Length: 232
Image (cartoon, rainbow, N blue to C red; front, side, top):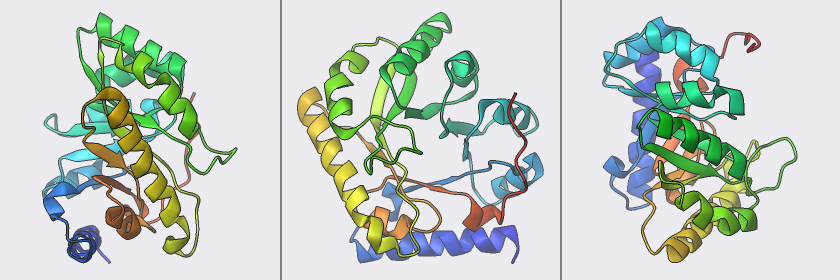
């Protein structure tokens, strides 16, 4: 199947999921994740209306962004190391993976130096998996006001990675819990948070049913990933 056909399949699935959930498809952003895929593949998707892309690693993204049209937006969705924060602020329009207080402070420092306000999502490890990053649910509430007080950070919502399961219904509770945590955050802040970044190729319909506003889809659009190169 060609890239444009896979993209159309995903768009059709998004529309169907939104219809089933009685939601407007315009409320859900499809974020194609181009990790380990080429700039040529990204450019091909731009011919079909894609303008915002997700990348997992700063170093890979720097090279890819320079080879792609300059009018695209890029979101960082992978774990961020402190020594990559300056480049993350420079190259990305949103960072989904603020997973600890120290990284929020580091992003804020570099955003200040760049005179840039940085939209971010706070990553929550809802399922408590040792292999994944993110604030614990109670921890994100504990640090919320301190992060919100960082002058160059704009909290736009929350992100999570659900455990892999062959049956998407098995992870519905993770998406429900993230939505509840977002509501708790809104109570603390006294303001709405527009985004829930949750759901990937295998489970995004369930995530949409539970309120996802950004779904991160890689393999189902781009096909199987080539073998990754280690970031230096």
